[in-house]
Amino acid sequence: MRITNLQQKNTMALQIEMIKKLMKQHDLNQRELAGMCGVTEAAMCRYLKGVRQPGAETLANMATALHTSSNDLLGLEPPMESEKLYSLVARNAATIPEEIRMKLIHLLASPQDYIDGIDKADGKF
Image 1 (cartoon, rainbow, N blue to C red):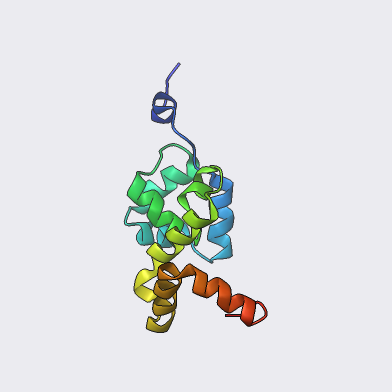
Image 2 (cartoon, rainbow, N blue to C red; image 1 turned 60 degrees about the horizontal axis):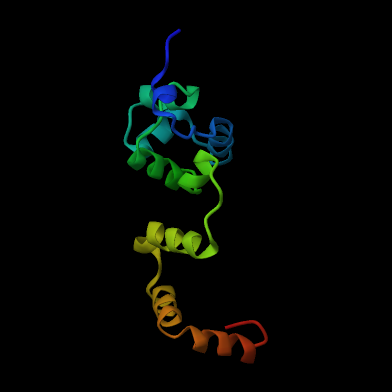
């Protein structure tokens, strides 16, 4: 009996059906997703057939291209809310407008001001 690399490594498997659903949702084909991930179309084909597992960098690029997280692509437990927020900000830092960036910095520096501001503005800051 032949043992595949995936079986040997005993790694977590990609949620292939989820990836295909997200590709369809974002109107991406294999070639486009491969290009966004920096891999060949043949490599992407192997990932989507479950023959190979992507490396960490490719997995992160797939998650970014599909607007999700690596944990979701691997079917892992969802991260805590703070981890989700950190990941979202880190992944999109270059595209966050200056005004929003300053609000985030203020929030992180003085969280109590933000909480007080919500209380005073009936749920709006």
